Image 1 (spheres, rainbow, N blue to C red):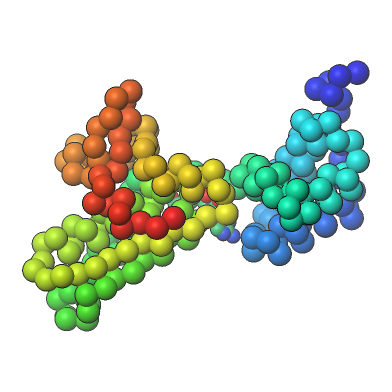
Image 2 (image 1 turned 180 degrees about the vertical axis):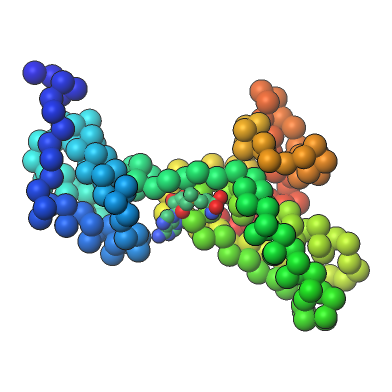
Length: 203
Ligand SMILES: C[S@@+](CC[C@H](N)C(=O)[O-])C[C@H]1O[C@@H](n2cnc3c(N)ncnc32)[C@H](O)[C@@H]1O
């Protein structure tokens, strides 16, 4: 029987615990029920793709820091949920805007304002924060600096984020004015975050 027709192997409780603790130790991720199912599925799918039938062999291959680094990256990327878009939750961004403006109005901002985008996925949230800060600071006189540090466990997501190029769907929640203000239009219905904002985000 070919690999693709074989039933997926179910991990034993002990095998599963080894994966869970490795994941928590390396990424801090504590699995939800849904992610448990995802872990079980993705580990067995990857084993099948690689033609490995022994779960212990696959586990120790991935755990091996040098040989397993690339495989670890693939697996983690498949386990996380990267759903995001620009200005996905406007009330949160409005709160950031209000907080920056309050600080500026009360003289509480001394030149530098740092933001942290944790679990930034493909960067939409991180550039959104940069856009909000940029709007606030450009309205004022003075030499303010702002920056966004953005982190994620998915390396493929970070590499998309660094390019700052998005399809129309990611910009769905923006109005025409915002699209024009924050993006350069490329060919093929793609949009790139303007350089001024890209320079402020470190992934
Ligand atoms: C649903 S996305 C949210 C993206 C963005 N923050 C937003 O709200 O639009 C969650 C992101 O968090 C990342 N993530 C999950 N656990 C993480 C961890 N322990 N450290 C860093 N990133 C993590 C995932 O890889 C995924 O890209």
